[in-house]
Length: 348
Image (cartoon, rainbow, N blue to C red):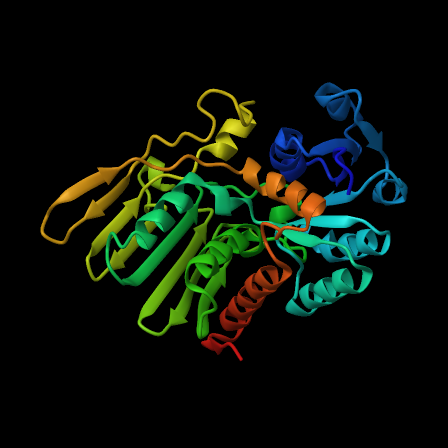
């Protein structure tokens, strides 16, 4: 590609497109947000009148000036829109989940190879302060060999809301919403598990989509617990810590969730004072009653799109490879099967 900025078309301007994708795309110096496909024309104009508001996704795909298409639509539409964008000759970023099935995920990766376009998945939580801090402590050997890794993504929303994420349709529910974040972080740390055990259920009155998920990834000498709930307070409000990690040399605790989502909702942007700064430290317990605190590393979700821009301009690796995205989808699907059949699923 030339030295000019890569032109981006964003499909969808709901929560994901408005809060995450648009601000982070605009923060990447190598990218230019050219068009958004949405019915929210007034909101697009308020963001930047130079950005074209297009009525249909097909309008974005038909624009020959657009190099990269970002898909931030309801989960059930991801695979179809990603395939259409690849066939239209566009590079593609798909919000999580990558697809609704492992077969769809593999088909998308094969299609990207066949048409010679780059494809990646928006696993922005790889760039969260909580995860980066815990990863650094593990890699530094702060607690020796890890034997128990527990990751919680909890929210207290006891009332079912009228939105597609909670309506029971394909791709709705907390496991498809938050599970991909939890799985991707675990696999980035520990690789592919041997087997998966899961309990996924709707606990809130009137809920037709799962709102509670407890998933165990089984490794030799290690258990990884992934938990997501809409009926529990987060660690910062008295609930379970975001991360609890036990090892042969002690324990790590990170209580609070990364602040970047709240900062983006409040209007803070990458480069602003305080962006990504996490005041919640990592605690290390030495097993003898001693506790030391270590400053959390800053979050940097803007690095996702910077890496995408670099990959399209120079051929460098994407922030998330299709192989990594497929591995996440494999665990997501195995957990669904485990919960449905009440058994442990061994990965072939």
